[in-house]
Image (cartoon, rainbow, N blue to C red; front, side, top):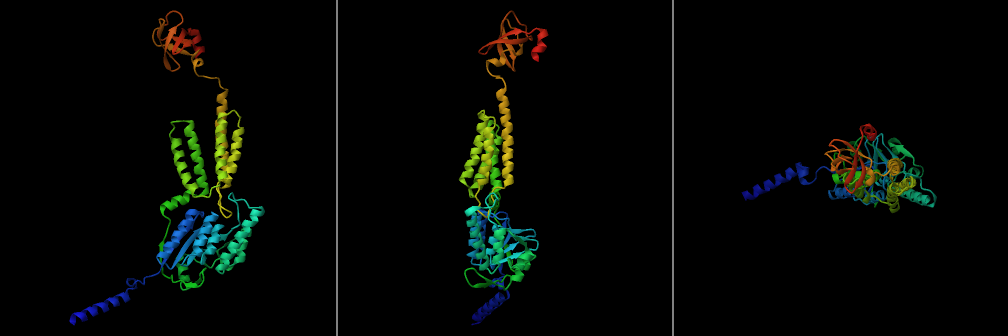
Length: 443
């Protein structure tokens, strides 16, 4: 009995300690997972956000906070992120931060898909008018179709979360943009917050309506914020699949390989071109390529190379520049809300290619106009020196090499300047050069 009473006392003390230590009882402080949408929205971003949502759900986090600073991006990836957020089993908060950040174009759609939108003072959002991959407006029936689809989608997302659907439609139709104060006043965003800690404190206990029905109270005051940053492979891939970076890598790869083929053994151009080609393939495999654009770019460089071989006097180079411009504009199809290769980058690449191949072509044309200096004609008339006495045969130094030489008449002493007057195979026929003709012959 005494042993039993002692055991009961120990058990009671254990429960008391658990009551004093909530973490030991499994009732620790709430956890909030923090992820970031930084830069262009692309396929890597979509996969990363999906992983962040899955991780937050598996850890039973109180909420997922997406720090956002994006000019827009790939429309397909945007749709994937929107779908992920709408079907998340925990509240998702989009926080446009830090100061100077923005949620433009595709970023506006992602923000409106979140359960709560907050903005740091000094940030802005909007500018979601559909554009082509090159940044130009979409026109005609296709433009109307894309515009109406985008309007319907943004209105649905805004209305689903009780926000200002009319202003969101205006952002799509007219590309209007507002700062944090205006966004809250217009009820496009739900709140302003100077930092994440103050945002979580203000949200604690707030009921958020969920897209799939019902509401959920946020218990996030004093929450432990856990960073869910991209892994370094994701960061590298995210940087690579920027359309401009991928395009430039492709050009460097093509230039490097052309230089290596043109000058075998140079090594460096081939090495740089090979590495760039691998990185370009990795980057382009993650981007929505347009086959017509790829073929036009390759065709352009085919024309550049052909113009170096055929006497077209630059006609093929001019055609190559046109093909390069068209192919670059069509190369990456990022959708109506995305951004393809920058027109400035395309223009710079076309000018650089025209200058480079134009310079090479001018040298090729100049070389074609020069007389031929190979074979038999190279040595006839050249002046050299007898390296040993020619009586009548011996060795003579001509054109940087020693040759077997035969004097046409008499004996020629060693060291005498000689002129090549004939050649039979690898044997030269030479004659001495009179002193008065020596200076003239050298000139």
